Image 1 (tube, rainbow, N blue to C red):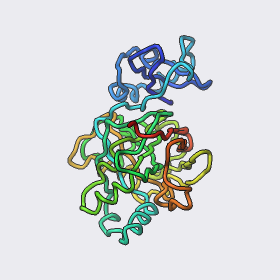
Image 2: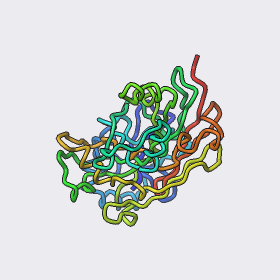
Image 3: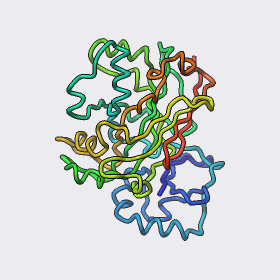
Amino acid sequence: MRIATILPHASVEPVVVAGTDDGAWVELAALTGRNALRLEERLPWLLAHLPHVINRLKNWQGPRYRESEFRYMPPVVQPPTFRDFHAFEQHVRACQISRGLEIAAAWYRQPIFYFSNPHALVGHDGAVFAPQGSDELDYELELGVIIGKAGRNIPLNRAWEHIAGFTVINDFSARDLQRQELSVGLGPAKAKDFATGLGPCLVTRDEVAGQIRGDVLDLAMIARVNGRELSRGNVSSLHHSIPCMVVAASRDAELYPGDLIGTGTVGTGCIMDLGPDQAGGWLKPGDVVELEIERLGTLRHHIVARPS
């Protein structure tokens, strides 16, 4: 099932909707009989009753939304937490090379993450601008994992059960600010917390079950700027698996429905990895960035000038 949070043009309240095969969207509350403004409030019940809800959706004859009638919000508008991992070796190596360093041995021993800003998410087709003091705005192509079932100290063999589904993340980054912050030994902070793209929807785990082999999820990943493909990779190239990330995130800490986990950037999945000369420069006003992940859809953002 595909689930989105939308803001209808005639409303001031977001609506959680499920996608039909013909591209329309149906209010989830009508399908489930359960009202809640935020998706994370519905996830545990939804996952427990998913076959029933899918059957109702297939036979739905009631009102529907079309894309011309709303704008997309992030599927989880404000996750309780947002942990962003650093789990693709090719990208980590490129980051370290840019700083004249080798990959730390500790990186291979366990998945490493930082906490990012859950209040700065930008939905599909939203506008993004570089933060103050930055001239090196970059995209980052990542898989988003959304927790659907609470847990603490989750064992590896139960990790998939706690995942509601997946989405696309664009971890926008200000590389010049990032270099300054990392030189101190902390961060990234202001280099990351101004905007993170998320969407267009949450695709439940059953929709990609055929792409899961053991701990490996096989989904192609592509990034385009102004229609030109710059990045191509696959989720399967993760060094640390998605279940390993769930285990690490839940160690001595409670995960809650709606928590967002980012995999980190796939190899070549940003301008920094490619080099600005090869990529055509850093992002600038007027650029359109599209990140596509197989079976999850395409997340698009428009780069605009920072308001004066």
